[in-house]
Image 1 (spheres, rainbow, N blue to C red):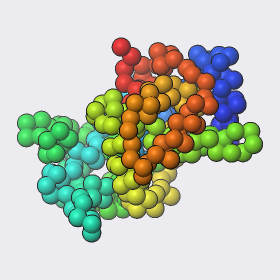
Image 2 (image 1 turned 180 degrees about the vertical axis):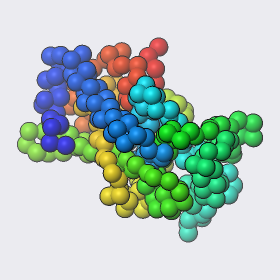
Image 3 (image 1 turned 60 degrees about the vertical axis):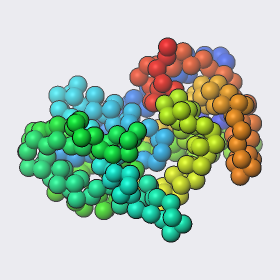
Image 4 (image 1 turned 180 degrees about the horizontal axis):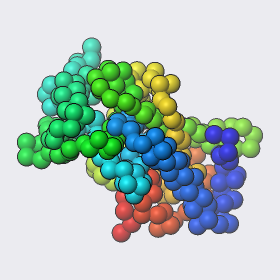
Length: 310
C-alpha cells in the first residue's frame, strides 16, 4: 500500500487542481491490478475456480465482473457465480442465541447444494445454478444460471465466505484465492485518521442501500453492526489464505460520495446509539473537496454504489 498517497491534503489538492486526471489515475491503478490478475490466470493456462472474497462494500461484484471481462477478452471463457445465490430460504436461516437470524454465517448457505453444483461443473456437466430473490427471501423457481464449464474455462465464485475452508474444501479442483478490501485509511499530515477502512465501506454501503434498497441511514446502521461482527467471525480469520490481495480504495471516492452521504445524514433521524458515529463520519466528509459525480466513469467500481449517471 506504500504507493498510495492516502493523505487528505493530497486528495484535496488533486480534487481541486485536476479532478479528471486524478480520477483517471485512481481508476488506472485498480484496472492495472485486475489486468495483472487476468494475465496471471491466462499465463497459468486458466484456473478452473477463482475464489473471490471480501467484506461488505469492498467491491466484490465489480471486481468479479471486470476480471471476467478481461479474461473473456483474452480468450479465456469465464463465468461468475455469487455465493449469495446459494442462500437458504429466509425461513431456514439459522438463529443466534438472542433469537435473531444469523444471515452472516457460512451455514446460512445451502452447502450441500453448492458442493453438488460446483463439482458437477468441474465434471463438465451442464448445471442450472440457483438465483436467489432477495425480495421474496427465496430462490427463484423459474430463473437459473445455466453453465457448462469447458476444460480451459474459468468460473469466479464471489462472496463473503469464498475463502472459508467450509466452502473451499468442498471443491474438487484447483483454486486461485483472491481477497479484496478497502485496505488504506485516510490520514492528515499530522497522522490523524480522517476515515478508517470500515468508515469508507460504511459510506459506500449507506449510499448504495438508499439508492438500490430504499434503506434509511438508521437501517444501514442497524445492519452494519451484524455485518461487521460477521466479517470478524467468518471472513477475517481466513484472509491469510488468499494468494492475491487487492486494495479497492479509489482515493477520490470520498470527494464524490460526500454529496449523497452528507445529504442522507442531514435528512435522517438516527437513534442515540448511532448518533456519535454518524456525526464523526459527517464531519470527516466535510473536510473533503467535492468532485462531481458525473466525472466518475460509467464502468467504475464506484458505480456499484452510486448507480449509473442519469
